Amino acid sequence: MGNAQERPSETIDRERKRLVETLQADSGLLLDALLARGVLTGPEYEALDALPDAERRVRRLLLLVQGKGEAACQELLRCAQRTAGAPDPAWDWQHVGPGYRDRSYDPPCPGHWTPEAPGSGTTCPGLPRASDPDEAGGP
Image (cartoon, rainbow, N blue to C red; front, top):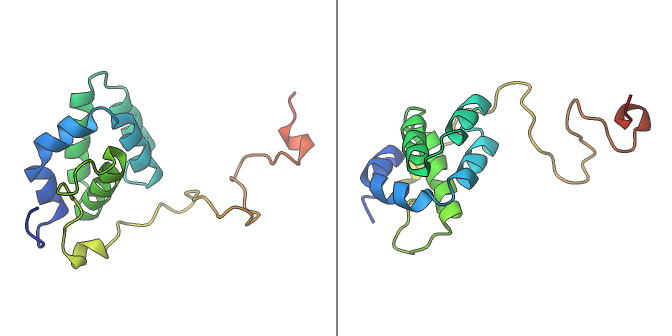
Protein backbone atom coordinates (compact mmCIF):
# COMPACT_ATOMS: atom_id res chain seq x y z
CA MET A 1 0.00 0.00 0.00
CA GLY A 2 1.55 3.29 -1.05
CA ASN A 3 4.97 4.33 -2.25
CA ALA A 4 8.07 2.92 -0.52
CA GLN A 5 9.51 6.45 -0.49
CA GLU A 6 6.45 7.96 1.21
CA ARG A 7 7.22 9.77 4.44
CA PRO A 8 5.35 8.74 7.61
CA SER A 9 3.57 12.11 7.76
CA GLU A 10 2.33 11.55 4.20
CA THR A 11 1.04 8.12 5.22
CA ILE A 12 -0.88 9.74 8.07
CA ASP A 13 -2.35 12.30 5.65
CA ARG A 14 -3.34 9.61 3.15
CA GLU A 15 -4.75 7.22 5.77
CA ARG A 16 -6.21 9.85 8.13
CA LYS A 17 -9.83 8.76 7.76
CA ARG A 18 -9.05 5.09 8.31
CA LEU A 19 -6.69 5.87 11.20
CA VAL A 20 -9.36 7.95 12.94
CA GLU A 21 -12.04 5.31 12.43
CA THR A 22 -9.86 2.41 13.53
CA LEU A 23 -8.04 3.98 16.47
CA GLN A 24 -11.07 5.51 18.21
CA ALA A 25 -11.91 2.31 20.07
CA ASP A 26 -8.44 1.98 21.61
CA SER A 27 -7.33 5.61 21.70
CA GLY A 28 -6.47 5.37 25.40
CA LEU A 29 -4.09 2.48 24.75
CA LEU A 30 -2.49 4.40 21.90
CA LEU A 31 -1.98 7.44 24.13
CA ASP A 32 -0.41 5.20 26.78
CA ALA A 33 2.00 3.70 24.25
CA LEU A 34 3.01 7.09 22.85
CA LEU A 35 3.60 8.48 26.32
CA ALA A 36 5.72 5.46 27.25
CA ARG A 37 7.79 5.88 24.08
CA GLY A 38 8.39 9.59 24.71
CA VAL A 39 6.40 10.81 21.71
CA LEU A 40 3.91 12.61 23.99
CA THR A 41 4.72 14.66 27.05
CA GLY A 42 2.73 14.30 30.26
CA PRO A 43 0.74 17.51 29.68
CA GLU A 44 -0.01 16.54 26.07
CA TYR A 45 -1.18 13.11 27.22
CA GLU A 46 -3.42 14.61 29.92
CA ALA A 47 -4.96 17.15 27.52
CA LEU A 48 -5.75 14.50 24.91
CA ASP A 49 -6.96 11.96 27.47
CA ALA A 50 -9.38 14.54 28.90
CA LEU A 51 -11.22 14.91 25.58
CA PRO A 52 -14.51 13.03 25.94
CA ASP A 53 -14.98 12.42 22.20
CA ALA A 54 -12.71 9.62 20.92
CA GLU A 55 -12.86 10.82 17.30
CA ARG A 56 -11.73 14.31 18.28
CA ARG A 57 -9.01 12.80 20.52
CA VAL A 58 -7.52 10.79 17.64
CA ARG A 59 -7.78 13.69 15.17
CA ARG A 60 -5.96 16.04 17.54
CA LEU A 61 -3.38 13.35 18.30
CA LEU A 62 -2.59 12.93 14.60
CA LEU A 63 -2.13 16.68 14.15
CA LEU A 64 0.02 16.98 17.27
CA VAL A 65 2.30 14.11 16.27
CA GLN A 66 2.63 15.35 12.69
CA GLY A 67 3.90 18.63 14.12
CA LYS A 68 6.69 16.74 15.89
CA GLY A 69 8.30 15.45 12.71
CA GLU A 70 8.80 12.28 10.71
CA ALA A 71 10.33 10.15 13.47
CA ALA A 72 7.38 10.85 15.77
CA CYS A 73 4.98 10.04 12.92
CA GLN A 74 6.77 6.74 12.32
CA GLU A 75 6.48 5.85 16.01
CA LEU A 76 2.77 6.70 15.97
CA LEU A 77 2.25 4.38 13.00
CA ARG A 78 4.14 1.58 14.76
CA CYS A 79 2.09 2.01 17.94
CA ALA A 80 -1.14 2.30 15.93
CA GLN A 81 -0.40 -0.93 14.11
CA ARG A 82 0.23 -2.73 17.41
CA THR A 83 -2.82 -1.17 19.07
CA ALA A 84 -5.10 -2.02 16.15
CA GLY A 85 -3.64 -5.53 16.08
CA ALA A 86 -2.89 -5.18 12.35
CA PRO A 87 -6.45 -6.24 11.43
CA ASP A 88 -5.71 -6.43 7.72
CA PRO A 89 -2.34 -7.54 6.31
CA ALA A 90 -2.81 -5.13 3.40
CA TRP A 91 -3.09 -2.28 5.89
CA ASP A 92 0.61 -1.98 6.59
CA TRP A 93 1.55 1.49 7.79
CA GLN A 94 5.19 0.48 8.11
CA HIS A 95 6.03 0.58 4.41
CA VAL A 96 8.28 3.65 4.49
CA GLY A 97 11.77 3.57 3.03
CA PRO A 98 14.79 2.40 5.01
CA GLY A 99 15.98 5.96 5.63
CA TYR A 100 13.06 6.56 7.97
CA ARG A 101 12.93 3.05 9.35
CA ASP A 102 16.48 3.35 10.73
CA ARG A 103 15.96 6.83 12.12
CA SER A 104 14.82 7.54 15.65
CA TYR A 105 13.63 10.70 17.34
CA ASP A 106 15.55 12.63 19.91
CA PRO A 107 16.60 10.74 23.05
CA PRO A 108 14.65 11.46 26.23
CA CYS A 109 15.49 14.61 28.14
CA PRO A 110 18.37 14.32 30.64
CA GLY A 111 17.11 12.90 33.90
CA HIS A 112 14.20 11.12 32.21
CA TRP A 113 13.79 7.70 33.78
CA THR A 114 13.83 4.73 31.44
CA PRO A 115 12.95 1.21 32.58
CA GLU A 116 15.85 -1.15 33.17
CA ALA A 117 15.95 -4.86 32.55
CA PRO A 118 14.54 -7.00 35.38
CA GLY A 119 17.21 -8.04 37.83
CA SER A 120 19.55 -5.18 36.92
CA GLY A 121 19.25 -3.78 40.43
CA THR A 122 18.11 -0.40 39.15
CA THR A 123 15.01 0.99 40.79
CA CYS A 124 12.75 3.88 39.95
CA PRO A 125 14.49 7.08 41.05
CA GLY A 126 12.79 8.76 43.97
CA LEU A 127 10.75 5.70 44.93
CA PRO A 128 11.59 3.61 47.99
CA ARG A 129 12.40 -0.06 47.54
CA ALA A 130 10.10 -2.53 49.27
CA SER A 131 13.14 -3.84 51.14
CA ASP A 132 13.74 -0.42 52.76
CA PRO A 133 11.18 -0.29 55.60
CA ASP A 134 12.38 3.13 56.79
CA GLU A 135 11.64 4.71 53.42
CA ALA A 136 8.59 2.63 52.51
CA GLY A 137 6.85 3.08 55.84
CA GLY A 138 4.15 5.57 56.62
CA PRO A 139 4.13 8.51 59.08
